[in-house]
Length: 181
View (spheres, helix red, strand yellow):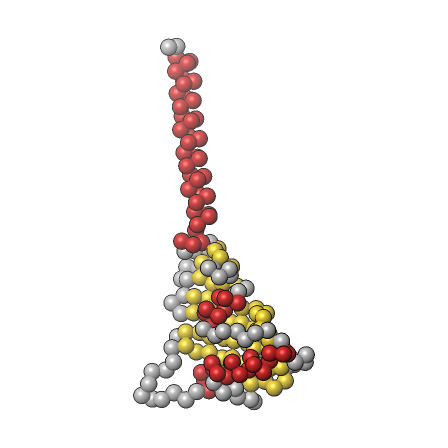
């Protein structure tokens, strides 16, 4: 075989090998991009089992725009009927933090307050409340800060502050902050 044909054949083999390697690398990158979020790779996004958009961080993950199912899962509180989530976020590392603003329609406002006091204790008036409740009436707050801690017991593992009030239209606005120690 003449020398120019050997060079062309060799160049063709090298080109085919390079294209093959590029295809393999592209497939691996596609797999990583597709499944990186579920595998926990930092800064890759994923959707939780209940539909909330989440992003991995170096120490855990954070979710924004929580769905009702995710809020109920993380807060361990079943939302009363007529309640919608205005905003909610969740961050999990070695500890976790849940922040949410809930709105319950006027027809279910009293039922929502009863459910909140059943879960979080007495609703105390005259307490400092979050700014999301500005303009609300009948404001009150439930918090682990309000509960006495016995000296012979360990402090609670979960801290919460739940503040609620009535908007001008009669709907109940509730601001929730729950975190672990």
